[in-house]
Length: 499
Image (cartoon, rainbow, N blue to C red; front, side):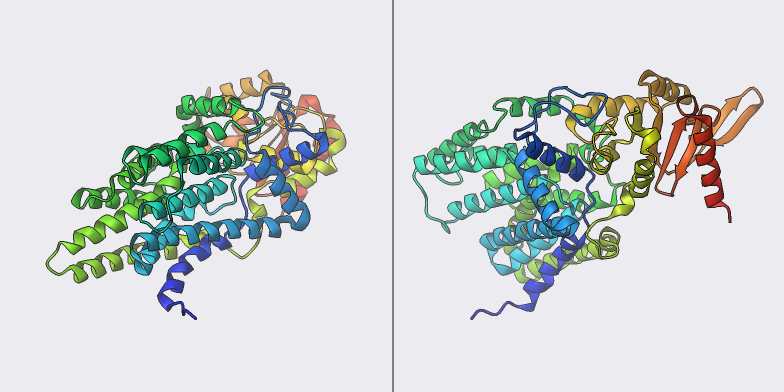
């Protein structure tokens, strides 16, 4: 029986922070809402139904299969089940990454590629439907590399095409990350890393397979719309922004891309692998979310090219060991630095990131607050709709249909006047916002005056602060509610914060 060396398990320990991090993705809640709607209606949604702003607008629910599975797990075991699901998917992805490295150069390279990938992936240690795309992408990449290296027997073009069509059809109903897989297939066919005829047939059949979804070509139309709006989206959503050295989680990604590029120049890796890494790396530099596909490719390129470069040096083993130790050390230092903040205290769900207590207050005050127009922040709409139900249609949630509203709300924050006009234009009667006060300097007839941000944006003469808990605040427009109710809530809040 084979004994697993301690070095393997030391490398796999780099996966622990990704497995242990709690579930904290705000988009999970609108996915749960969508899954519940599918079950209740007995059909897939075609329009938006959880907001008062865009109710009835067309919506392509391209992650419906993921949503049904997510809902089933949540109902079966709550957030511990979702956390276990997340850990399982990350463990599977890690196993595929290590297997890719082993295909490339044996156990030592498998360990190196795994540790580099873990450091680059730490900032995305979440449960997202994209994680399924990562698993599908890595599985496809392993098959392609195994074919190219002779570890798997070649298959006839027709069989490859049939398998690819089914594979991409399933992928397209889980998450729209399949263009990354199609691009890799096309590049491997173009550069002849494997039988070109078979790879081309698989790529063409896979593209047709993506149309086997309830929305047909409408799925591709949504992807094209995302591409056209990427600059606007990137201005407001972190994962759509470029890689930046100011973001600590981007540092290992930038370092990995730079090191892979230098290594590829010094000792050229297989052309198809280099082209795939270059394309994915460019996409990742422009939009950080694409590093999910670029990181494993860059790690493979770096490991292969660095090994080839070291082999040409006078003392190759010294170069190899020195380079490996440097890469391991840098990744380990980064994980030791950032992993504790990602994992925090052991728990399945990080409720501190959501307005959980505020939702309790809102539910308790439903007689006054329900079915009134209210403003909520982008990342909280799904949670509030999930917690409060249809009696509280939200302003927006994290779905793509709300990108224009997100841009409008963000633009309104440019000045107090623009913000008040925004609240009035939408007829908003109350608001739940994050409790992150900051000071502003305003020009008044009496001169410059320092005031709290919220005192300027929700002026006390027009808005009453009726709830606050350190995570969130609830404001109510005085003209929309009985004066006795707002006065009572204000007095209770004042009493609760007195020493």
